[in-house]
Image (cartoon, rainbow, N blue to C red):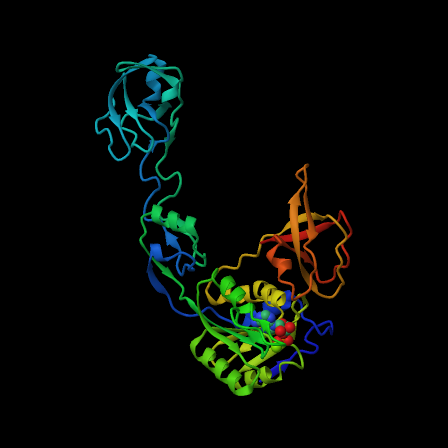
Length: 411
Ligand code: AMP
Ligand code: MG
């Protein structure tokens, strides 16, 4: 069933805010069920299904933070020189207990021998054969990395819902865990619609344009734990659209289409979607963007993006990202924003949140400035490609005067 939202807002506006749109979508969808067991080395980009709990202390035992000499710090209140009786290397400990008057040559990462409780770095010593004179009086624990000072046994090291980056993998490896449980990869269908769309590399006939949204969306999807089912370019005719949406619905958790969701131009898409499920057509108060469809086909969730390249890019980032995060069990992390000063007048009409493409930079006083990156039309991809941030202008905001504060979202 098709649901158009002509007046979906409590204030009677034909637009719904980005916040409302995201809240409505998140209220409906649930995480895709199941868990996969994986070798840690396969985990990059996947979302943890369970907390990782450390089975050990890290470091597992007291060890040296320096190359130098291990000793009992109290010995140096009696004498300034100690006798070196052996060497401790990382992985090759000194196994005897230090006696009064003794010290041990020790390297970074080597276990602190029994009887020692401090390390003096080499630079603060004078060696005369095995006789070591100490120029520094250390306190207890000097240059010693204590057992468990990084991580304690039974501590949660990475929480469920984290999308694993390189540093998380290293942290999990450092507690000795080799197998992890992650949420299943999402299957995401991708459909571009439009009779005018021509794949790059082919000859362009009159009235046609090159299709560019799928390559962008595929690349943006690479940041998520997904397998993309790319259904290509679908002509604006009912049987082809029906086939493509049916196939995507059957095989995917989420289907993303671009093009054909503006009012009046999308009758075929609308008809087909109404056969296959329950879809809302919203006017979201976002610029570039505005027309956006969301709902459920018979099996898969559905997001319909506008066809204009900048609009589809921006709506993917602002509206589809939270959907992908929730479906994959990822903890929601809002994109970081900073405040910069407008380097010039920034034109903005109240009514829609505007994601203008900008360039931020620091001046010689380290102050952060931002300026629009050229023309801001919803089809002008160079406005994004050569920019380094969005200038996020709130829904109700008007023109921003030179020198006023602007929220920026770096790319
Ligand atoms: P639509 O949303 O279908 O009305 O399309 C809006 C504009 O975006 C039109 O100028 C289309 O030619 C263009 N467009 C639609 N889909 C794509 C695409 N996949 N790649 C590049 N441009 C597109
Ligand atoms: Mg179209």
